[in-house]
Length: 436
Image (cartoon, rainbow, N blue to C red; front, side, top):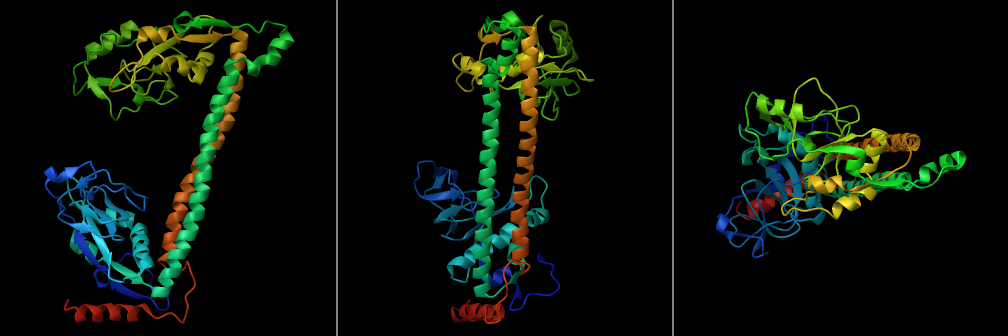
């Protein structure tokens, strides 16, 4: 099973199977009665390692482990998902979803070299997993993996270079994440200025109008509708119509029907008579993700809305976009937060939501504010897309670094390095000496 497909190996490299340089210890889950969250025994990893991490975070411990991974063993997820690879930073217990790969070369950086080898083939391992309910790979598949092994000194240089470059990539990525957070904060800063009247101070000065805005309740400026007042879950019907929650709608009103349960046509008809989705209708999350604001729009299919959101239709002399942006502001949400209830998840009652205060200038000023917000948000969105694009590229850069490393193109070869074939021979001699 070849992973690296180079026709010629770099000088001093050799081809071998994983079992030539490492032991493979398949995990075995102990009885569930030995699990605990009190840090009694060894950290227990059952599987489902997270891609991208070096060291996994223990969430469970085991008092009577069956199979143990030692410090610096590579932990490979062998089922659901296949391929995720971490490094054990302490002695730990491993369940049947994992295997431990223990390098026979007792040099500190060699475990890291092998870890990066597996990180380079994570996606490949996922493709060779088999199974109907979930994918898995066998111990035989792992042991017979073919790798191209460089000289020991070159392994050290490769690990050092990978870590140097990864550090630079991580630093740049961290800066981008900070930029993304700053852009999010800048959005709120714009909204704060908008609804404090600072974006349109010049307009009021030019027109010699008063700075005084009206403070009104949400139900004075809009119809705040509960789409499903009884809150009784409608019966499910396989061939029915989508029952759409706030989590199924994006900011622009597009609906993802993938996870929607289906309800009878009779229920849909009742809702269609009780409210209307208009141009400028707004959806406001009242349960769970309280404060999420989305546009609502008509679609070419029939659907009903869950009580996890409220429908907000602006009244006369209220510009819908102005209200849409004010509902997203911290000024509005801070009032909502003080009215939250719920034990398992946050919620605000429809009556309390209707009484939240909003700040209303003249209709003309509302339109000016909405335009200025849109112009600023357009610039922010362009920058956010650029940041997201760069973040995706940084992920691809790491993959590229690993590919170059295991083609022998990341660091120069040194003719004075002891060839990897001699290293393999030494391992074999040691095994014979130990009677293995």
